[in-house]
Image (cartoon, rainbow, N blue to C red; front, side):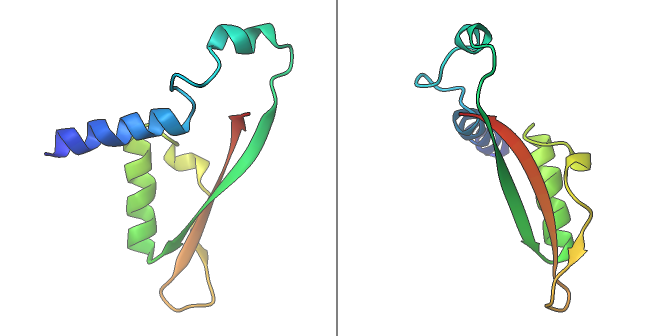
Length: 91
């Protein structure tokens, strides 16, 4: 069951990152001298344990390294933190 969920998550991640049939091939990007990149920000908000766990889960899926996330930052709510990840995606 876990293997199936991991495979499912990885396929959805590949689709999100543009590895599906509708995305341009690497060769097409290589032919463009300056492919357009656009920043996207991911924001995790929750308990320190939940945010840390999610960061590590996304690392296991191959989406982002743990070190790519900001340090845990406190919010105005007690026992709640946030962490931010900024990625550049091809458009």
